[in-house]
Structure formats: structure tokens, C-alpha cells
Length: 117
Image (cartoon, rainbow, N blue to C red; front, top):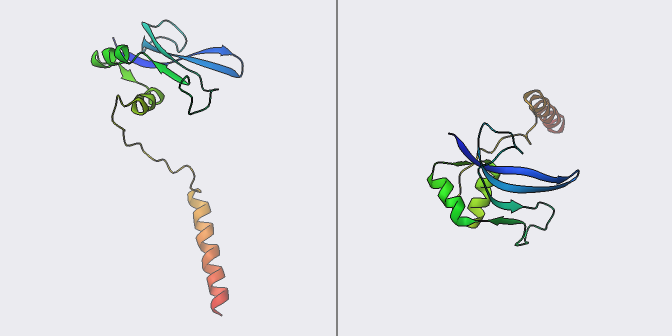
């Protein structure tokens, strides 16, 4: 069975509250889970101790059993010191597209030529 440690959403509309659960990867996000391991409340300030609560021993147990944490849970584990910080792919989403970059270089070359004259 492919087991994951992931978030299950609860709470009302625009007031999210998540449970950290160990679940079969084939089950729905908010569906059946094997064990509740903690909670995550994104509405609390980032420095609040109550923002993320985990039963560390049970999380380590599930990791030893081969459970794979999702990206968000992996970040929580890194912050708690249970997992070494992973190198993440820094996507270049902030960069303009290929055509826009070509236009920008053409515009810069044209402005440089105008100042050189």
C-alpha cells in the first residue's frame, strides 16, 4: 500500500483548518485515513506555536514504514528538524517569456544605439 503523510482539509468556507494524516495515496484528500498525526491552522501567525502541531513519534513511525510526505508536510518536518532540508527546483516563473525577453533586448540595443550617436 502506498502511504502518504498529507493534509486533509476541514473548516468552513474561507476559514481552512487542516489535519495532518497518514493515508493511502489512493484515497480522496478528505476521505478515509489511517491515523491523524496533527493539525495545521494557516490562519494563525507564522511564529505561533499552535500553527503546526504534530505527534513527532507517530510521524517518525510512519516515515520508517515508508510513508512519503507531501511537499508541504516535508517543509513542516524540515522546520521541526525531523528531516534534512531538501534542495528545491527554483522554477523561473518570475521571468518573462522568450518573446518578451527578445523584445527587451532589442529595445535595449536600440536605446544603446541612439545614445551612441
